[in-house]
View 1: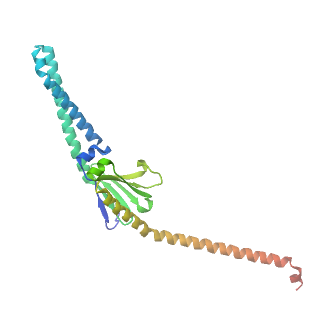
View 2: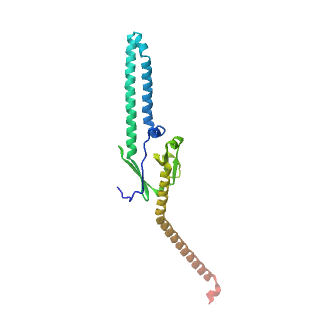
View 3: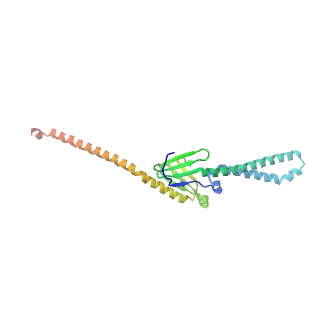
Length: 228
């Protein structure tokens, strides 16, 4: 691992159950919860009509009822366990995500299950944006988007989801990135100035050569100078 020096700022997403229900990151969790609710409703309906079905003294209806009730109960338990597992996994994944800001770059790491690592140089960052929905404002959450090219879009950006106290983190990140660009700019400026000086010197040399050539041509065409 390359040594980037001191970590100036570190940020991680914070898990919140209500917030996840409103975000794309909680899609699987929402699906499991909806499935559990539907299965629970079906079980309640079957329980309400249980006495009516049993009172029919019809063996076929009783067997069908028991089979449906058993299947729905199993599905409901499974979906509840699935929802709980999704909540735990999402919480653990957020704990494994780190955004570390160094003096010249941002390093994103996800150490949960499959490890992911990404480095973004501050010189490549074009824009930093903050987005907050109505629910985000109520829960004091938000999303920070870091664009690395001129096109605005999620496909070309690094998105920091589930950020608590978003505005505070946004101001700190913007300040670090801005200062990082200033620190890295003098080297580029020196190179640019050097190239500019070389171009000016080359152009001056070409101009002197043209003046000298023109002067010689005028001397050859002047008959008085030839007689002297």
